Structure formats: structure tokens, C-alpha cells
Length: 588
Image (cartoon, rainbow, N blue to C red; front, side):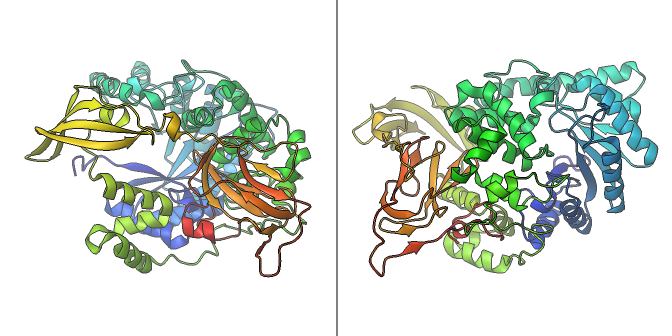
């Protein structure tokens, strides 16, 4: 409503919509319809493996909804390398032809890691322009290497119609190249963008003031400048900061150089795949897993694969839940991960992952949500959110019901603690404002809590807050005995999502024991041996560190008396929500 004459653009992950998993076709279609009604114009449709069947579903959904289809080629490799054999000019030209035939209105080159060198940009865009003279071409890159401005100038010279940039104060490194620099350079060549550099400066100054409030989420703790080592590790710009934060959260901050090296190894191990969400997450999860478990090479992984609990994302990748990568899945790693030929083998998916999923029942979901949250509090957008992100939506609604409206709270007060005596103004709506002043904070009590005292519009208010950094709130856990196969420890720090077994249960080797989650990376911990579960020392919701004891299994114990339950191996089976995003699917 505020800017009706400026086209809005968004990313759409093809058959993965805006999630990390395959959805029923009607969920993708419903999302696109809602997005167009809400004001979205251009949809950059991509697939994390350039799998055309996934791309086609997203493109058809956008077209049916009335949106502009910007079909994207996710770029990797180096077309300027004469020794390249996989991601060559012929590959990209062939993929372009398939997308044009599928109904693309615009072609996007999505260079998510900033691998597009200036010469490669000239070759790639020039080659596509020669074969498709009337096709609009839109180029996107990241400036991790420092080559972003030069590459985009070459793209324009070769025939690109649009290029992505970031205002100066938000540009460079893992972001996009500088808009001001590109605008000035193009003007010097007689190419007018219609954008005023003074306007860019004004925007840049505004965001320069906003950016420090989000400093804790940046990668600048370790990355102070661009680095050409991106051509080696190939970490996408959007993932670099997330992976860095993930490493810190998992206690691997000092191993960041090793993680980058492991990322390169993991990528090659997976078949040198296209890396963009969610396939990039697979590579990142495997890299962190390798570092956490002291695995340096593919030989190390293959040698220990029988006893490793691989991240869920890696298992699902090899099952085919993301689609099929260029050149197919690498062997023998795929067979090792999927435990092919064993009783606990994971079932691979044939064809497009979501093709056989039953349509999502929106009416039934709305009825269920209205029962839980009230009829007046559930909109059609809420139902769609629940279909896309079941557990995230549940957490969101719980948060809203617990804390109320938090959007008006100033960013600095939301992200970090207020100082004693500090005062903020929270404008809830026109004519209603809260003036909140922090008065005092008590010491932590025996239960790990603090009392926090405020003055709100002149009235005293106190709340009880858990101090998660206090010794009372931190539980010291028993460590697994590395010398005993039946002493099953956590392969990484994280939260226990679900415990799958009970004490007194006989389990077969490879039975699912515990599901862990850490920064979007989920791992199913399986039984390394057949035996009797003698101890389960964690419960759902517990926080654990790497090596903490989860379950003890006695290989030599007698089988339980008749009537006791027995657990059998179980893999991730095809179906909606196989990324274990919602509790019901996880339980199934």
C-alpha cells in the first residue's frame, strides 16, 4: 500500500516453497496465491539442486497465481575453467533452454556463493544472450571474494538486464556488491540506471545507524574483509554468517578454519553439488558433524559410517527428499548412509519428492487451530503458516499468547538487556503508549531466577526471569563411556527433541533412540548394538553437550519378560514433513 508502483520480489524454493522439505502440491499453490494477493509481483523460483521437476512445480504455481516467473539457475563451479567437466557452458545453456520451455518470463543467475568471476560472468551471460537474444537476464551475486563489482560490470557488458546490489553501508563481504559503486561505474560507461547517487547515500546513512543493533548476528567477529578462499570452500554468502553462528553455538568457534575446510570436503563427498538452501544446509550439517566427531576425510567417514548417527538432513538428501543432484548420488557413501541391504535401511524416494504426497487438508487444519487458539485469532494466513512450518507456528502462537504484542519494542531493548535507570517508549497504537523504566534486578536465587522491577507509566511492576547463565540453571551431565558401544552419547551439543525408547526395552541395532536438534541441524541417534535399554538419562526438551550420556544399552542382558515392549530399526519414511519439523510427524 505504501509503495504501489514498485514491483516486489521474493524467493521461492520450487517444490520446497519457502521451507526445507517437500510439501504437497496444493500447499505450494496456495502459498503463491496468497503471496500474489498480498502484493508480491516477481517470484525468483529456484531449486537447491537445479532439479527441473522441482523448479517446474514452483513455476507453474506462480504462473497460475498470476505472478511473474523469474526462473533461476543456481550457479556453481567455474565456466571460465577450461578443465571443468561438470558445470560447463553446455550444462548452463541446456538448463536455460529447459526453463524457457517451462514458461520462464525472466532468467535469473543466482550466484549464491559469489563464485562468478569477472571472466566467467562475461562468458556465461554472453553465451546465454547469444542463444536467447530476447530473454530478460537478472544476475545475483555475493561479494565474499571482493570480486562482486567487477563481475557485475562484466555481466552488464555481456548483456544482463538487471543486477542485484546492496546500499553501500550494507554491502560487501557476504552481502551484495555496493550499489553506489556500481551506479557510479556504470554512469562512467554511459549506462544510466535512473538512480540518484545522493539518494543512495541517504539510504546508506540510515542503514548505517540501524546496522549496529544487529551486530551480534553478523559474521564480522571473524570476517573483517572479503576473502578469495570462497573459491575453495564455496560457502554461500547467506549461509556463511549462519554457519559461523552455528559453530559458536555448538562450541566450535575456535575451529572455524577447520569447519571451512570440512565444508569443502563435505561438498566433494556429496558429489560436488549445487549449494543453496536447503542443499547448502546438508553440506554445512555434514561439515559440522565431521569436525565434531574428528572426521577429516571421506575415508574416515566411510570407515566409521556403520556406527555414525548422520544428521537428518544428510540422510534425507541421500534418500532423495531434495530431488536428484547433477550426476547422481555418490557411491559407496550413499549406500553406507542409507544402510542399504540391512534391516534398518532407509527408503529412497523415486522421482519428484512431493509428487506422491496427499493434498493438505486446509479446512481440517483451520478447525484444529481455531479449537486451540480461538476462532477469531486464526486467519487463512495462519493456517498456511501452520502448513509450512508446523512447530515454528506453534512456538509463534505460544510466544504471542505468553508475551503479547512485541513489535513496538525498540530493537536494542529486544535484543539486549536494558540498563538500570534506562527508559524506553513503547507505542502500541495511536494514542496508547507505555513508558517503561528498569528500576532494579535482584541477585539470582537458588532456583536460578531473578526478580526484575520496572516502572510502567508510573506504576511498579515486577516479573520473575530465569537466569540461564547461572550455575543453578546449568545442569552438569554424565558423560558417555567412549570405551563401551552401549554407552550412547550425544554426537553434538543441542536440545533433545524426542526420546524414542524406554528403560527395559529391547532394541535392535540401528533403532532410533533420541532425536537431537542444534541450530536447525537435526540428528537421529541410533543404537550402535542390539541389547536391553538399562538407562535413559534424558527427556524431551533437555539441553545436552557433545559426549553427554543419552542412553545405556547392555548387550549381554537377558531379554525382558513377555509383555515388555521391543523396538525395531526405523528409518525416515517418505511423507509430508520428513524434515521432522512438527511433533506429530516426528512421533509418527
